[in-house]
Image (cartoon, rainbow over all chains, first blue to last red; front, side, top):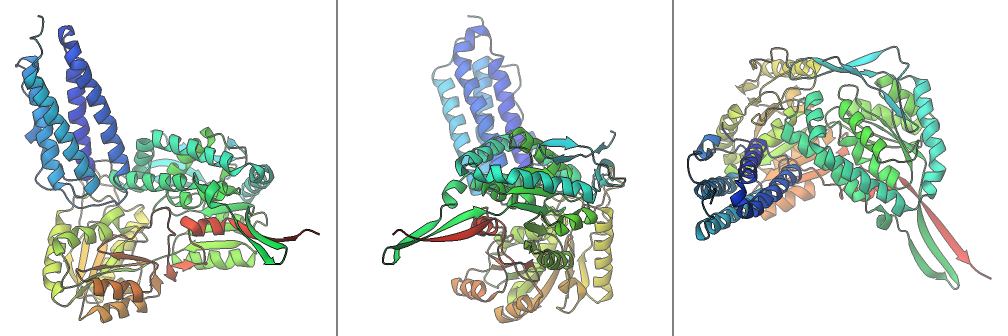
Length: 137
Length: 484
């Protein structure tokens, strides 16, 4: 789907965050300690995005956003190990927010997306630096 | 879905109207009847005025800080139901969901400003105006005020007034548009939840007869109106004849001037938003582009190409960029203007007449429409179309553009796109319009500023929002004292 409007962009960003939250909340019990802060972070990000969607639109800019499609940010295949999947989720989100920040015509939103991408990078780096033990160990 | 029949909110209670007639409220995307708004009777208006009058004394004695707390509660409630409010606006009006969200945000911003009224209501004083004599000015509420609201911003416009009116200690009556009354009814559910004393805010559904009863009622001290110029003029005269304060915001024909040095890549999306946002049903919508000198050819091409790409459809679809017109009659009127433009010799560069929406055969859609070779004397250049129709007039220089702007009977808004500070200064200084945009397509003042308007775009002196609102909703009393 083409993400050509402010509303479509935010609807997809919220979907990405919900996807991440569901993944972290469904982590096996053995990984709960690692997943909990990530889930908490995702909940906070969901709130931040919802606020930005409702507060950042008062200029009512119709300017079309071009070149962003939701298919390019599909969730990773569910076959991998948990840490790899988590890192892939973070990587996909970072890529989306970075691409969107470059295209969205509202400065506040561009800043928010850039910040979210940075957070995704940090979370991804953290997962790679300290990979949690494999599930069931 | 069975359409709901809306009720009035009078004296802190929801009451069914006894009116025999009701207006049908349609979802403009599909033509379905979604509600019925009773055309409330003069007796019901009288009951609302009586309730507001009875509530006034106690409410004006309520400390401003306590009144402000009600505003804080209301803000919280509006934030909590934000998405629901936006969806109701889109469903009753047709504007796209992002525009509806913007409208809700603007309404909330006015409540936020009203939260600060305790400080803004402070008077001023001077010692020793003569030896041993001091003078002070205090601001006092006036009484019962009313708002007669338009259909194009059905949630926001009453909130240009209501938060300030009650924050200043007055009591209030809203008559929402009978075309789009549902979001205002939902907002009154929130006002009810905010638990204001009975009678402080009242809602009376209705149309012209209801408005006339409000205007004629001796218990109403002042009225705020937003709508077309002929109606605004009439309401202003009627209010004055009945000794009421009035602020009547009216129609518009806003020009967007593009200089040869303008950054077209940045300007074009702004022009599109201005002309086609809310399907052109904004009193700040740009409906004429005055292309100066060399700007004309490249601008025309870019505008048409970009407008042709706009996705028209049901405003609830997040990917849609322009929704339908609010009513079938509005659609017919806009189509009539397109015919008139052609008959007068303008050239149609982009024709929005044939737009059809799969799955929405009964929607009130007209696509973005652009005319070229428009002359200032044509009806499409002089009259308010209130639809997605943009005319382009080539002009030789800024002076000629200003002549057209200042020659219009309207004076709501005008915008200039340029890289020149000198041109910008000249434009803001000379354009006789209340809201000026410099590289801004929709010069919509935020809540701390007045929503200005000049000439036939405004009747009155004090505008909605900002400091003007506080003046409109208060009397200034001067006290001069000497102690022997």
